[in-house]
Image (cartoon, rainbow, N blue to C red; front, side):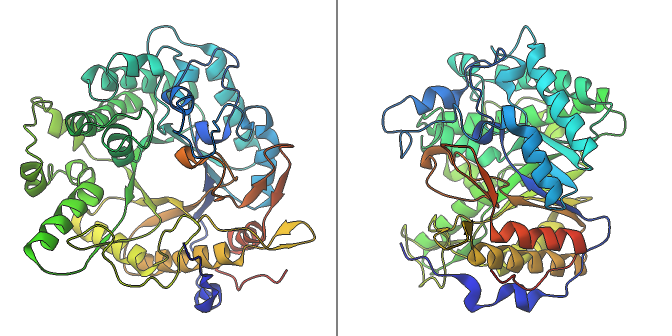
Length: 457
């Protein structure tokens, strides 16, 4: 893998001077299993990731999120860091196993108490809380009963959503139901690279529908207990750039694009599942009950957009032109695909508002000055993508905020602790936090609302 720094484009300098609205949300994002730790504390139940991490060979470095960044005990320190970075919003996820250790049934009040403390501290430091109810950590008890391929999991999720929303309704108005349902269904139930590690097309298709049913049911429950709730869902997009025009290439391009970019947003937007790929996958849609598609298509208030890279698709796997630059994950750096995505989404679906709920890059983080990571490659990546967001806004796309992924170096799922996405370095032995150069730069951007030239070390 070749990692090429993106400052050949001098993206932050080129984008300098673009100014965002005064009420724009500047934030960072995390997820519960990746940072909280405290896996056996205060009544938390087992999640599918606890079980998956114990499987030999499942995680590259053999690690887990048992301790992670110990955010459960150190959240006050982390919120103080957010305040130092001039952030005005924080996207986090709530751990379902902390609230319902068995997925349903008896509520664990100690779990709710933790999120009470977290929200109160965020508000006290001037940060808007933006919780996501599900970021992949399904209670293992529900997986034992069938997991997302069975409808009962969606129904249990709705109960969970109502309990959490009712507890926080006096302080939290912005809610996201689920994060990246594509990854839940595809990586968890088709490829098996994520928890729970199953490999079945049948299960994956069933899961893909039930996560959307869960979203629709949860939206209803949240709105029933939160006055003037702003509710949405977070979807990941990997725009497809086609290579070749052979029948095999065209077929593969459409299938990949349908699954990765249309399978979830189209039903939410009222267009149903992409018919070409439904047919090609021979999905009988037996999971789809009367009224489901209407439930799923009930209007959302906000679409959360996660973007990292594009995908070049030909007739064969790996067929693509030479890449100019890559991140440490091997993901191509191609910012213009981001702007095209935002404009295309708004033209096709016209949602009321959008949040950039994840955007960022794993980088080598090899350069240091006086102990601080000098990550101008990450800085340039974020600056270039912010430039695309700003241009999309000028073109009429109502984007209301940007959340950098991630606040902290953390447990990066099946990759363990190798990849570093954080604005803040975390020493996993001592738990010492140290803002990187990109964090200092991002703090200036958040303070001024303007894309700044890169900082000197």
